[in-house]
Length: 380
Image (cartoon, rainbow, N blue to C red; front, side, top):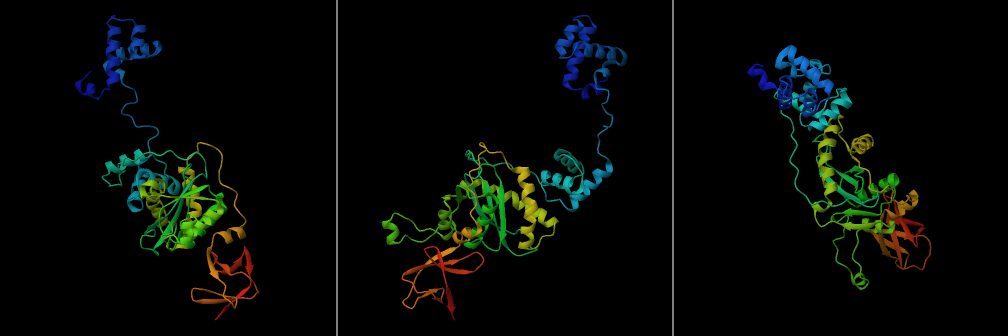
């Protein structure tokens, strides 16, 4: 064989060629050659015949150098590269191939796209090296623990208002839930929790950071100190009434699963909303109805145990009474109470010294005593 051909021969082919020459020179039998080459007797006889006819080149596969029957046409390749340059230039390769398949019906692998881009000298977003982090075993059951946090980001890339994504991720399965709001606060936290409960049920526990929405910064009162209690935010009180245990993370790294979720969504979700020309919070929430099911089908994982630990959702009226801002107020002698410099007249005589003012998620105000609504009117 010519030296140029020998250079292109693989190591396995060179080894087999040496074994076959041993058989041709009668140093070993064909059966021994087959065993040494890891081939069947029939295969070794076929190779010996081919080398006798074509020389050492016969050891190479007959289709070497020929175009594959499965080769993608130049027209499709050109279209894929044009789409990448025009629409997906800042997508990572995996996300870009998904979009090409789903939106344009161009089914190619990530590696194929990478080779095309490299040969065409088109820059692309490369995968970052993963940082080392300490591993924590996932919870075993769906609904056993849900990580919750708000992500402040330019979700519309300047096309719309600044907003916050309230994100939920189940620790056992990585199932994602979320919704966009104008700000991160008590009402958005309660509203998103109500929607989560109506979708999946009441989780056993939630993992939160120490944002004032989730953990009260107030100092304990004397009464709380005597009862060995600590101040709770309105959101904590609601979760406690639902029977959901609250765990506060001491650092962003501790709630790594939801932090990594936000990094992924800030890449994938932002770009897909750009393609769909989303410019408002309402439009983004409508977009999530199709995006999140697709995302969960792709990325959620099976739980170690099949049991779902979510408790059944309460009736909507009960959720409204629990997931609201509850403030205790003293009843004055003329049966009036004050909240935020506004005066309210209770229209039913009562002996109670204190009542609870509930500000519901829809903005309505209710005055209750022992869980019962009291008739009242505002004094203007």
